[in-house]
Every structure is written in structure tokens, then in C-alpha cells.
Image (tube, rainbow, N blue to C red; front, top):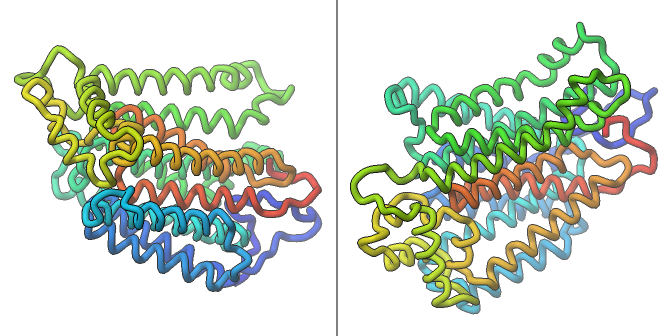
Amino acid sequence: MNQSSAGPFDGWRRSPSVAPSRTISWRHAIAPLAAILFLTLALLVYGASQPMSALILSVCFTATAVLAIALAGPRHVTSGMAAGIIVIWIFAASGLAGNASRAAPDLAVLFAAGAIWSVGYVCARSRGALDLAWSALIWSSLAFSVWTFFTQVASGVGAGSGSLVVGFRTPAEAAVVFGMLGLIAWSRLLYIVRKMDAEALAHSAMFDRLLREGLNAILLLAFSLTCLAAAGSTTGLILTAAAMVGLAWWETRPILQRQHRGATLKLLGLAAPFAALGLAAWGISMAWLRDESVAPGVGAADTLPHIQRALAYIDAWLESPMTGHGLGSAEAVGDSATTLSNAKAMLAPGGAQNVFLHWLVESGVTGLAALLLVLAAMHVRIFSGSHERGASRTLLRLAVATGVLLLLHGVSDSSLDLPGVAWLYALLLGMACGVAARPKNTSRSAIR
């Protein structure tokens, strides 16, 4: 299949005198398209929060990764992939994961996250396959957002409550999902803006270009943010706004710094990072001071619910600080730590509502350190790749911005234990690492 138009992340150098023609090999496209289909199914079942759906989809993702590597060839298997598989198997076989029956869903989700990361990595090594997969991800995300909006509004959900959270366990989970989808659409639109500026298009042609190349992203942004607003999480709205402002500043900074820009645009460029930091601090403080998961009234204590939960889970973690209580044990640990004084906070949905405490309780310092080490290694590769000449930086910046959004939610209102969120993030990280590892031309890229 031949494509003659520039792809959504066209960052590799091409001769300006030759039309950008590329051939997409279906051998490279089948696996990422299948992974995106399964990812859409995971979102349709509200993040695959139920153990059975998580196990089934984990098997599907693992099979897809095997297919991707088999079709692409063994040269795409990296030492990191092999090490990840070995570490997870050792973690499970050694008993460090805890009770086998209880830990099985979480182990399957972890293994599937590594599998979908591999699919994204292999896909990103082929420019045509990456373009096709990225377009498919935007269209599938749009279909999910439209489906959620119309099915739940048509059924009357949220008509009086202002919440489209049916199916998700908490408003925070819905906010994380739709915030990520909104950020994906926003990144695509920012790429088009940078591309138009690099081509020095006339203002009269910009609107036409934006509609022609970014209609799907505009629709996704509109529907995802509408669902986000209807989810009933003010914290989610603020944190998503913080991530979007930060990403907009990062993407458009070279444009706003040019000498011919007006004073207003230059001022916006200077103020944007401070606005992003202010929104992030506002969202986190609001989540801690006014817990959306705990209704005011009878049973409320003087201590903030977040503090009550933190103290209870820290005490539980200190019982087994190095290895934790085992994967899948957070709910049982929370039940055992519930007392009359903290019952209202502990019985609220969302568990520890802190991703670091959640991992400390379940896997201890060892598990949390391993997770942070893996993520740090990926981000080191992403940042190093973003500074290379000819790098396609938009996807790399999106992966970092998505990680920031998840971190903000992770310390505010959610433990991020929703498999669909982990899988979507793993796909973005895999694509970003694949782009960063791709050999770059020595010539300077037209789109920076």
C-alpha cells in the first residue's frame, strides 16, 4: 500500500525535491493494528478492570507481540525485551509476587504491558507502519469516545449527576482514560501547527490544512474532553489542562522564540511553563484537600482522607518493606488496615490512591525500584533520542507528557491500577523508544 502524503510523525529527513512516497509492508502493520484493536476492546470494557477481561486481553497482547516479532524478524528483539521476560518469570517463579492465584491477573497485565511495548517498538522501526498505527490509534480512540458519549448520554447517565463514570470504578479512572486520549489528540494538532509554521503557510491556507490533516484529532479532542468534563472529576480536568499546557509550550517553544513573533506570543511562551506548574500544583492540592471519592457528612474525621489512607498503607507496608505483601494484595491489605476511625476514607473506591504506596504495599522497595529503573531507562533513551539530529520529536514528547499526566494522577486521586491505562502507556512508550532507537540521517530534519 503506497501513501503519498506526509505521515503524522514525519520526522526523518527526505529530499525536498522528491515527493514523500513510502510503502507500508503489511507484515509490519498487521501486529500493531491488532494490538490497537485489542486496546480499543480494553477501553470498551472500561479499562479491563475485571480479572477475567484482563487475563483474556493479556493473552491477546502476548500473542500479538509474538506475531510482531515473528513477522519483523529476530533482529528487532532487543536485550531489554529478553531481560524483561526473564525478570517477570523469575519474579513469578520465586514467589516474590505472592500468592499465585491472587497475583496471576497482575502478572498477566505486566507481561502484556511488556508485550504491547514490544509491538510499539517494532512498529516504530518502520516509518510507514508507525504512520498507519498512529492514525489507527486516533481513529479507534475517537470511536471509543463517541461511543461512550452517545451511549451514556442517550441512556440518561449523567443527566442529573454530571457523571459519565458508569462502568469505571471511580471518576478518577474515567478522568485518566479520557485525559490520555485528549493528550494524544492535542499532540497531533500541535504537530500540524509546527508543520504549517515550518512550511510558512499563509493564514488563509492554515485552516484548510488543519481540517484536512487534523479533523480526526479535532473530533477526538472535542469528544474526549467532553467525556472528561462529564466524568465529574474536577481534579482530572485541572491535571489534564496542566499536561496540555506543558506539552503545548514544549512543542511550540521554537516557534514562539523567533525574533519576528509579537510581544504577546513571546509572553505566552514565557508564562506557559509556569501556568502548567501552577495547574499541576492546584490539581494535586485540590485532590488532597478535597477528596472527591469521600462524601462529606456522617463518618468524616478531622484528618484528611488522603492522610488517613497514607498512614494506614504505610503501616501495612512497614510490615514487609522489602518484598511487600504480593501482587493483588492491596485490597486485602486495605481491609485489614480499616478501623472505626478511618473507615470512611479506607472504604472509598480507589485503594491507596497513590501509585507509589500501591506498589510499595504490593511489591515492596524491590518491586518499586525495579519499576522505576525500567521507566528511567526508557526515558533516558527517549531524551537522548530527542536530541539527535533528524529525530521525530513529537511522539517522544507525547510519551513524556503522558507519563507526567499519569504521575500527577498517581499522587493525587488514583493508584493507576487500571490495565487499559497501563497498556496504552506501554504502547506509547514502545513507539517512542522505537523512534529514538531508529538510525537518524546526518542531515537536519525539516520538522523539528
